[in-house]
Amino acid sequence: MEELIWLAGAMGMRVVFRDLGSRSGEVHSTGIIYVNPRKTLLTQRTTLAHELGHVHHRHDWRTRHDRERDEREANLWAAQTLISSLEYSLAERLVGNHAGALAKELGVTVQLVTLYQGHHDGRGRTMRMDEGVA
Image (cartoon, rainbow, N blue to C red; front, side):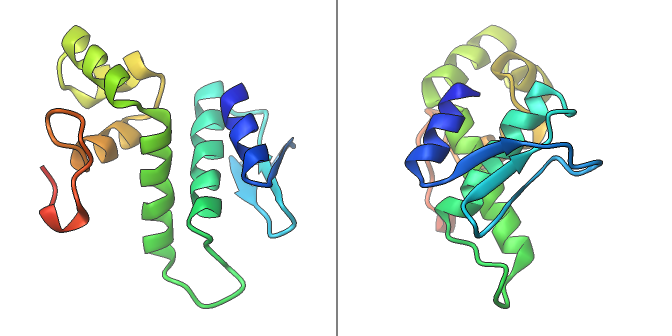
């Protein structure tokens, strides 16, 4: 979590932990990312990485946008940020390629493992979007 908070700072963002009720987090144009401390650490990490994905892609909700595309881009950015190819390879050797087992081993969500698997070849290299899903 500390690395993500540092990364947020390097991206010009400040992370604030605040009870958001049922929401896990949100990013504001004011340069603040709110993360709900009432959620599990896994959810907090995933949420922060996801919100940083929005920042990375410069998603702007003040204008008309493709919400589905923005969410997909933010999730993929989170997956690629939280899962290194080396850690993935080691985890796969330990537990096989089952997304649930890999998620547990890597400390991420099944959704992020599935996204990672869909955008990397069997050797951990990122595939171009036009190559399709493996």
